[in-house]
Length: 319
Image 1 (cartoon, rainbow, N blue to C red):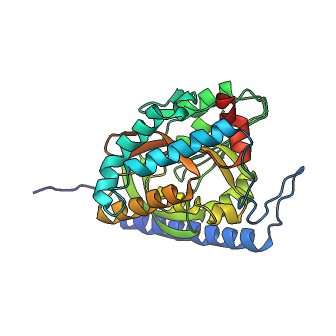
Image 2 (cartoon, rainbow, N blue to C red; image 1 turned 30 degrees about the horizontal axis):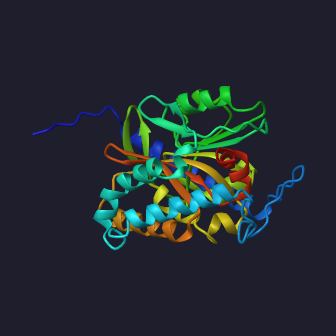
Image 3 (tube, rainbow, N blue to C red; image 1 turned 180 degrees about the vertical axis):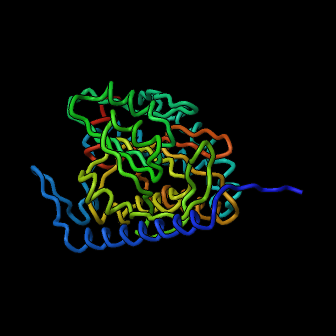
């Protein structure tokens, strides 16, 4: 028999519940106000335009275009037997990613590893001195990669992060950039999030803000150079929003490089993962450059379609 001993009194419990309810009400009021009354941001030469990503002119670098077509054929071919089987796709995708990285001309693209405490992030640097924009969803008490990027990216690069657990994360991220203490997902809602608290991951009910509002009202940048996503599950909803013609396109949001962890999948999540990978193959927008697995999948992929991304980061390897 396991006996649980607690020092929490009924008074403290009811007080905690009252404070939590008050926090939820204030957050929802703030969100409604933000969505209804906050004016569209218009900075120097910056504005969001619907569908600005659709039917864009491709780069004029023919060697890059040939290399991207080579990678697309490789990836589709390696996974053609898996496209109707969720378990097969989950199992074989890592091998397909690494084979196509090593066996096609995309092996010319120079990747730089940026180490966190327990994993490696990747970045393709640009010779341009134009400042970059780096966005992190899920800090997890670890900012080593962001600090390294801040040291090595051009002066004036901007950093943004969201994590619902303020304790530890807020202080850690302060030397890096702008920190926002909320969970980010597909929709603005109050729902369960898996968060790192007191050294362990727990499910906790908390407010979420939708990612489009996060980009448009808080980040206020339409081009994201590096997107670091490790927010314990919402990636299954956010990645489809990055597909051709989906929510990112509809709001003019361009993402050039992505490091994401796709968390351990049950049967339903494997079905979602299959849909995501099939969409990526059909779109031909993103090229997966690195994949490795522990319990989860960790991916690094690049936008090989948008001319802003291609010209700034990738075409120079094919001149």
